[in-house]
Amino acid sequence: MNDKVFTPRVFSGIQPSGDLTLGNYLGAIKRFVAMQNLDYETIYCMVDLHAITVWQDPTELVNSTRELCAGFIASGLDPNESILFNQSKVAEHTQLAWVFNTIARMGWLNRMTQFKDKAGKNRENVSVGLFAYPTLMAADILLYHATHVPVGEDQKQHLELTRDIALKFNHDYRTDFFPITEPVIEGAGTRVMSLRDGTKKMSKSDPSELSRINLTDTPDNIALKIQKARTDPDGIPSEINGLSGRPEATNLVNIFAALSDLSVEQILIQYGGKNFSYFKKALSEKAVEELSNISNEMSRLMKDPSEIDKILNKGADRAKEIAIPILKKTYDIIGMVR
Image (cartoon, rainbow, N blue to C red):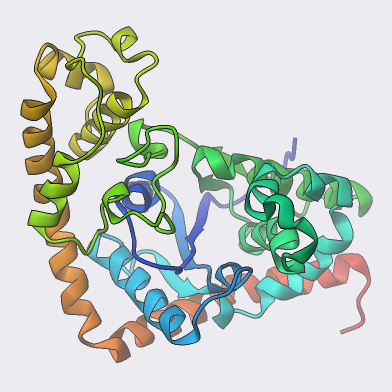
C-alpha cells in the first residue's frame, strides 16, 4: 500500500444519458450528499465523455447533462461546497487517460464483466471507447488524487482496475505519486433493482417505464409504479432470512430502508406480517415525501439553463486548479519535455 498521506478527497460521477432514477439517487447521489457533509473535499462529475461510448443524440445529451446537474443540486449538493462540473470541460481527463492506456494491460480490460455484458455477442462492433472506458474512469479518479470513491457493486471491478493502474504506475516509475483509492460501498440502497424484475438493476434504458421511478415523476406516477411493482404471494417477513429467494420483496424492503435511513431489520420489525398492499401504500408515501421536493427543484432549475452552465463552468475552473498540477507532475515523472 501507498504510505504517502493524501488529502481526503472524494470523486465520483454519473453518466448524463437519460432520466435520473431512484437507483441513481439512492445508489449514488444521496451518498454524495452525505459525504459532502463529512471531512472530505468532494468532486462530483457529469461524465459526458463516458456517455458517448455508446451513441447519444447530441441535443438530448446537452439537456441530460444540465438535468443531471440540476438533480445533483436539487438533491442537496451545494456547488459552493462540492465541485460540480461536466467531464468534457476538463481536457486533462483524456490526457491522463492516454497515459493510463499505456499502463493498463489488455488482459485487465478483457476481464471487465461490464464490457462483456454491454458488448454481448457484438464485441467486434462496439466502440474502442467502450472497451477503454475503465482507463478513462481511472483517470477521472486519479487526476484529483481521490482517496475515496462511492460506487455501486457493479462499478467495484472498475475501481479495482484503478487501484491496479495506480500500483503499476507507482511501481514502474518508482514513485508514490498516485493514491490507492478506497471504494465506499454501503447501505441498503447501493443497488436498486427493477420494479418489474428484482434480479435486474433499475435502469433508465429499460424499455418499461414501470420498471423504474424517475426523479422527475409526479407523485401520482410514483404511487402507480410502486403499486404495480412485482411482488410474490407472501407478505412482509418479520426477520431478514424471510427475504431469502424473494428478489422483488427484498428490493422493495431495501428501497424503503434507504429512503427512511433505517436498516432492513428495522423496516421488517415495523412492517413484518403486513401484506404488500399495506406496505406499498406506506412506501409510496415515503417515496413521494422524499422525491417530490427534488422533482420540483429540478424543474425550477431547468427553467434557467444559463445558470446551470455558469455552475458547470465555475466547477470546471475549480477542478482544473487541482487537475493541472497533477497532470504536469505526471508528465514530469514519465519524462515528457514541457
